[in-house]
Length: 479
Ligand code: NDP
Image (cartoon, rainbow, N blue to C red; front, top):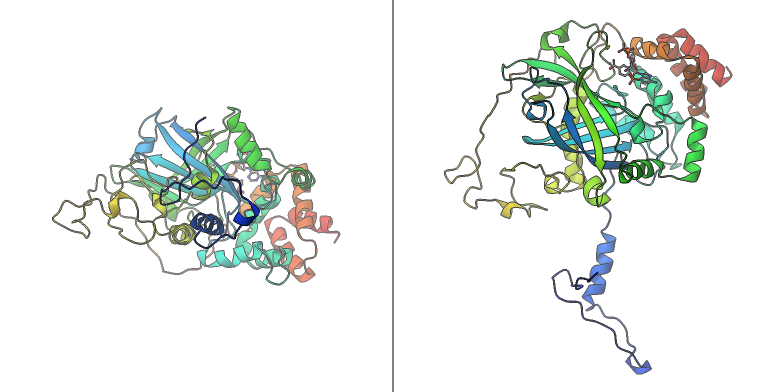
């Protein structure tokens, strides 16, 4: 293979140093050896800040193929016809661990998807769980702090975790999933994905529907027990990366069925649960799953940093026909995700290859770091809007119906009719005896060393979900 000529970053050839030296020729290096300085300076800048949450991730490219017509609910072109294929990128992750953390740890998994649609990028930034620990975006930074390292010991703190969870009973649903088998999937291929929030669809008739997204694994749910996970981590800390990358390299492409639950707009005032509360699911009996398509991951990125580390997923990225809802945590994330990327990757992070839409991009964001694309303007006279010099103009192709909102402005949610304990109880009652036994022992193990007043506070929540839940955990704790 012929090699390319090594050059400086300015493109000049690097002079060859190869000549035999005598003792008298041997001298120092000088600061003028700019090639040396460049090399060292670049190494110092090879790392960007890791994500505050979801730092450890594994990803791949793939395709979404539509298998069922849902165009009566949404005019989004990605869903416009059966057989339609859209390229996409997926990134899975743990939440709490740093970039070097082991993969096989009990944690919620991120399930972030970017669909490069013909109308621009649609991102669905969900998890492998249908709910989350909080229903109020204000609590997110504090919750995450309890999952990270203690300021003094620099160790993860079970006390902080259970102190927070026991003081925030809305977390019980997600805590129950986390401590169940689904809290430690065997690989990214063996778990479901959920949009988790309530989003909305709108159609050309000006109708809005509330929607929940579900991605059902076609590989089956496989999980690790705590003991199995310890063994895996002892052998390899990179089990997810190895399995996802390896499987795609071998041509075994993992698949998920995309399903939606659809709620007519006016139903939102009638359900006994707040349909915009991120700690609640919509029971399948009320809103059955409707098939939409199949997602297949079929291409490993050629360069991890370029396509996975630089990938920036944000719930703010929607396309016509898909929109948001009054879910208060979703509203918080619409701000915080794009803002996290501006900090982590830079102002114009959307121009990085992983994030560039396949469609034409026209906007009036000028100057600033990374504004290297599109000649920093396209048309140099059209640098403000509106203008008479042919700059881009807003052309509403389809008009989103107004989102009807009522009620008092407030951050904290009032409880709904079902409260924080019914749905965790429903989940617990679905488990068979073995699943319950593993739930109890996982919780007991996770509570090791936690002060008894915190344990007692949490046990009351288990009791409230189901007396057998509290009793089982008490027994596992030896109480
Ligand atoms: P259903 O019996 O109709 O649905 C039960 C759901 O539970 C299935 O989707 C199943 O997913 C899922 N499930 C099974 N085992 C576990 C587990 N260990 N951890 C998490 N989820 C699991 O009942 P409902 O819709 O009335 O929901 C009952 C409870 O099921 C809810 O309170 C909620 O905790 C849980 N659940 C509900 C979901 C929903 O959107 N309605 C989604 C996921 C969980 P699968 O079919 O993929 O195995």
